[in-house]
Image 1 (cartoon, rainbow, N blue to C red):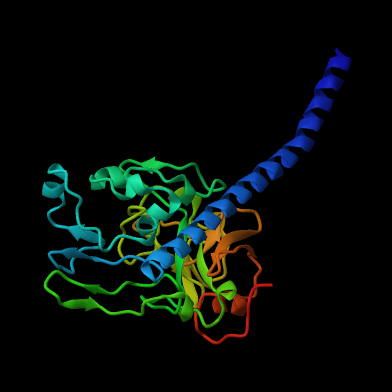
Image 2: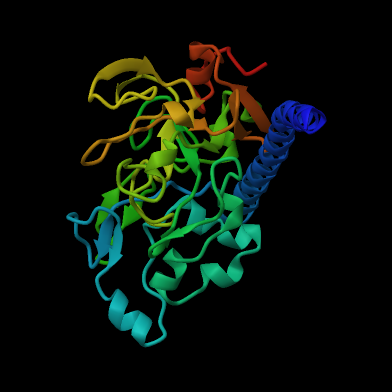
Length: 316
């Protein structure tokens, strides 16, 4: 009997020793797959640029016929058009939608039904360290966001900014720069293109975080699609707190477990972050993928958000 207890104790010790190693191997594999996802996204941006002579814009709010009350992009005839086998107008859809043909998703890009589009998972937009490709009720969610710049604004100086738009009557509704390779005077290898979004795991698939509460391909100018690298943020219920307290923090990337979590309503969060152990994956303007430490210098992180800020700073 004693011998059996000794054997059981030894087995328990061995399992305890092996489990952390298995977890590290699993996370390394997930981080590598996440890096590959971003590599494909970066290549898709470049292929899009080759055909459209510009990078895709982030997304915008509005409708056809034109209206400003929508909180995403709406075709007011979507139901009639889709029922007749006709694709609705998708002018304000996100960069994730616009690059679909460049990640070998032509069929999804051309699908007629908006409902089907919303409810189709695109694995390349999911970080395997965060979750499986999941459709929540009627819509899939993405783990990646474009960089709008180092300030939170429609053109915050980044590579994925608010698009320009002229409506069906010829009226100019939005005017913003067209972002091309020549726009990146800070250097493509020094400028952030797309990274992982900071999202509390408990906010996945619900409306507790404004960067997770709408469709992966149509949320308007919104934290679902874009984030920024500079400035400060009043972070409510961050770092595991649930008492409603707020703390002002910089916009360095942080671990998802420390992200804000609403106890009611919705929290709006414009920062990058990840579920990886010590940093986040990011694809730069030249298509290279970098692993950015959570301890990156705050001035460096802010600088890589801008395409033409003139900062003499870059990731090591």
